[in-house]
Length: 184
Image (tube, rainbow, N blue to C red):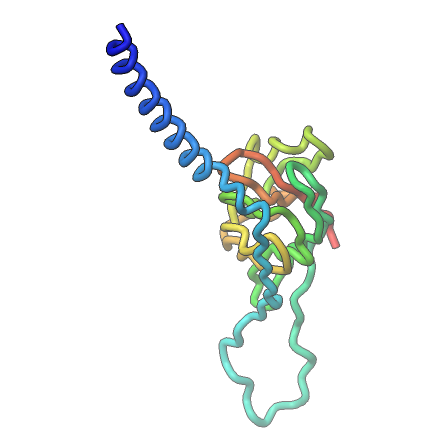
């Protein structure tokens, strides 16, 4: 009888250990908890449009070159994680647009994206999951969880259809923070 218990006990313990180690490995991969203690700071200047041709050498004094213009802006509010900073929708001198995050400060996380959305920004838990309910465009991976950076808006996007920006965690379908864009 002891021999039977001994033979059954070892495979069960070994199997339980294998399952526990595999579960811990998958959990670490999925949640990436170390990112909560790692910051990535990115500082980018506002891009400038590239001139297509040089002006003639002997021309009359011209007016100053047009500068990038802020079309809309808003302050980030916290959702799933404490988030602060400013979001600006900027029209560059060549007519293209970028979403600019300035003085961003949020938690790092797995699979964070910058989304341009049509969802209203709501305070607290009510705002965590609304951004994937309607129209949204991913502008790319979040370059850093701190600093100031730019995200190009595709040329074919009708900006009148979008009213907010979210720092979106694609892995867990939750907003880390968001800003309502209002006209400048």
